Image 1 (cartoon, one colour):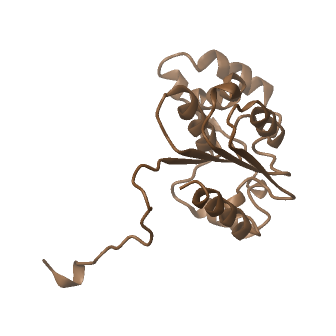
Image 2 (image 1 turned 60 degrees about the vertical axis):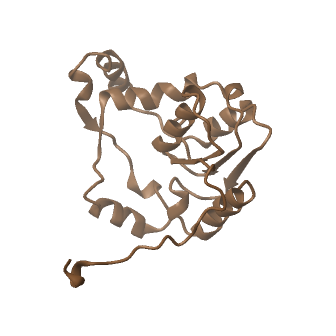
Length: 196
């Protein structure tokens, strides 16, 4: 082995138990984590949902929505992508976040018709009383990409005895990239450590 190419890896943290399974999802990932948690039957320790897309925080283009709903079920056509029309200014109060977002080669401004239909309809179908695992849900009060009101409404129906909703005043969509993100990330850490 070439020593200049070798490296060692040591985890920075070892969980005290190996039976811990925590889910974390942000935005569409938050919606996906909720769907998996409720519908899969998988056993897990808890869930953190950050600004989950259980509802959108803006009024989508009505024509795109109508056409998208019709075409979302047509094989092959449902994979067609359209501009997602997201205003990157609303990601964070830190303007560097939008700059970095634009430079990220893994980020694009498109969404498939099927995915758009999923985002616009799935949150309305989630049944909170089916969710019984520990949950932390967090949302910024001025998030215009996903709806904090929809998150609160869903959260209010969650049956879990161990649930917590954190509202971050004047925070936008990407809580973990906001000015003051240390408070958010610290809150996630504290919530996790209290449950493992």
